[in-house]
Length: 331
Image (cartoon, rainbow, N blue to C red; front, side, top):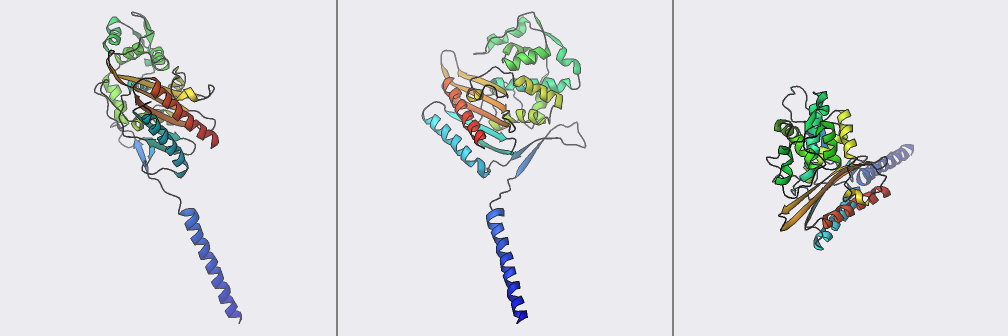
């Protein structure tokens, strides 16, 4: 009799344990999806024994469930804005650095980066300064032969630089990034070899521009320049901090920061490209790539757009920025 009771008890225990394991697998373990992660490593032939890690990419075929609603809301906003002719196209790249959640929308669309390339010029100079510390204090003269470049490129904005005046590389980098000064950009470009610039692209496994007029890049690929600065995985920590500090002083306010609180720290760079002539503008591209230092939960947001004028893309970038900021406040 006792043996029979033991068998019943053992059977009940086995049933309960089995039921518990089944419940655990079905309701807790089953929903968890392992999202493949791809490592992006520095592509530099000088190393024999190391292969430095620059950044990690999640698979974009799968999105974490908690970001699905946010992703859908932004997609719907873009669709509505295209239907209302505010824009003709848009791409978005987002990383939540606290949760390592990310997604991208329209990731393969190509855009003319325009002034966004100034960030790469800054990175190239800072990288070179790590082996040549005096480089940033080097003096350069803004000559007429450099100034003429502004006249040769349609829609190129003016410069604060004065012909025959001398400027340090450090000062020029600040002007080039903070006020997007094209004279400073041209002077810096004329004093650095293509090899240094191309090496940055090569190290990140990206195609270098053969000419700045026809060069295009996707929002996902461009975001990598901001990601390596935030991660301090390409420049050393001092120069990564320096670069983002300069970017945090950017004066442009008609993009992502337009719908953010004025006291929020943001490191960002915009780019604007006009397709056509002064007589006939076909379309305008406006882009903004930012690291938003939301308290205890920073995030990266890069948005690239195309539209018929400046107002439409600027409005859409602000809309998307507000959607993500409101999400961060609620989560």
